[in-house]
Length: 133
Image (tube, rainbow, N blue to C red; front, side, top):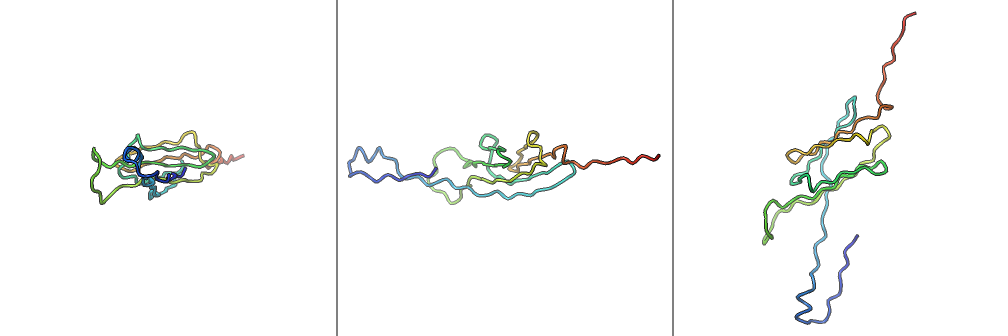
């Protein structure tokens, strides 16, 4: 939802101190990812520097995998001067029916998210045995 800016009322000292200034909208960037395929499924590796487990949200809805994360500033307190700020991360992937969405696993280690997307049993290759008669 977009934030609306309210027109400033006539300058009244008490009212002006109570009104909140306009905040900068939160920025999101797509994290860089590598996608690997094996016989068991897919592996997605996403770089999410500055992200911890509590600020990471991963969900699947209507066959769309959504990654959303907010990075911390790394220091306690209110910044007075800042030249570098890590943005939030947002990326979506359209999944096929070949992915077993009920068994997706995620691991976050040293700023790298590893998502394991197993193939559904119906999508796994099956070896057909030939009988000699």
